[in-house]
Every structure is written in C-alpha cells, then in structure tokens.
Length: 312
Image (cartoon, rainbow, N blue to C red):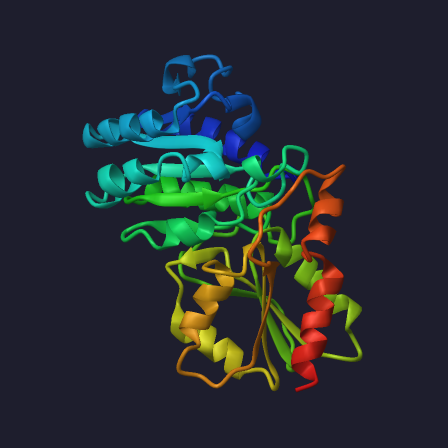
C-alpha cells in the first residue's frame, strides 16, 4: 500500500474486510470522517455495515458488546482520548470481563491532533488500556503495519485496542508483512544502545540511529505489540547491547511503552532512559512538529537519550 496515513489505511482495510466478511460491523461516534474518512459508510453495498452512534462513546461500546454477543465482529472508532476515556467503564465491565470480540480504534492518538489541544490529545491511553485484563494493545509503526494489525484483529478473537496517528509520514515497515502479537521486531541492528519505540517514534528512532552512525551503534526495535509483550525477547535484545536501552513513545513516560519495557527488564541490571511526555498534558500548536518538539518527542531528543546511556 502506498498510503502513508494510518487512519486512511485503517479505513481502506475495513472496507476490504467488510467486503470479505459479512460479520464485520463498523461503529463510530460522530467522527467517521476523521477516523476512517467515511470509507465504509460511503462504499456501495456496505451502507448497512456502518452504524453512526453520535457523540456517545459509552453507548457505542455497549452496542458493540451486544453485537459481539450475537456473533458480529464490531470495530469501534473514535479519537483515542474519547474511545477509551469516555467509555472506560463500559470497556472494562461489558467487554473485557466477558472477553467479548470487540475491536476499538483510538484515532488521532498522542498529540497528532495538534490544533485542538489537551482535550483532544491522548497522552495516557496506552496506560489505561493495557492495565485492563484480557485487553490486547497495539501501536503500529506506520500505515503498512496498520493494515497488517487490522487484518489480525479481524481474524482473531478477543478485546483489542488499536492506536493510530492522524498525520501522514513515510512507511518504515515492509508492505504485506504478517503481524504477530508479542513480537518486538529489530528494524536496525546495533551493538551499543537499543531503542525500543512505537508509533511515529519508530521513524524518529531510525533517524536518530542514522544521525549517530560512526559514533554510537544503535539497535532500533519496533514494539507495535505493547500487550502482549514477550518479556524474554525484550531481555534478550537488551542484553545484546553493551550500554543499555532507551524507550521512545508519543505518550506519557508513566505507564506506557517505557513502563512495559521496564517491567520486562525488572530482573535485569540494564540502564534505561525514557523519551516521552513528562507527566503533563499536551496543548495547541500551529503544526505537528511544533508540539512534538515542545514535548521532547523528536529525533534529537532520542539522540540525547542514547548519548546519555552510552556515556555511562
């Protein structure tokens, strides 16, 4: 797929899956245009496979639970800050406890909705979704991997949360690769410091590794499966480098990818640095790069963290 926008890739893949599987149903909470470009509801023959729930995420999740009970495969879409935040109780009580086959897409994740400020920016969703028992949490690196993750979600049972970016950027993973939950994929080999990253920060980690070529050998690891996470593989990667590890995420440093990697390495003596949002909310910005720079989520911030670990 030439597409470089995750939310467009999500919508296109849902159209294909709906055409292949009559049990897939797509719900949104008055944000179909922003989360999937209204692709399902405007595709001839799929009009009855889309349900517009209005500005009511909790009701959307409860309805999805009912659909799952009768054998449907509901995909629920809203902004990440609303998909989980407004409907947390319904997700926990009605979906996760019963292990219902409901898929939730948190779109415009992180601070990718740069213009709307803190109320529309999710810097905490990985934390509160991964703590829910039975919930799987996926943060694909790019549009290519988004396609693979959505296909996996449609063909495997259980509650799952998908986190996608609002803005286009170049793909760094191969098109058509099979997604395997729990796997942390090494995208670049290196021997000094390992950078575990997810989402857009995978791209920035690769840029940082290139910037440090000839000075520090950086291994870049794509952790698109936050939960499940293969702790043994994480420890193996961490012990394969000389100095230590850095985590990089468009999310709070509390409870997200950094927390998951730290938990996996709790029995290892591995120095760690965290690149992420430092216990604060986002805010409005003129463009995406501005807010990422303001919050410390850039290639240069990863470079600084790698240099700090390497100097120990």
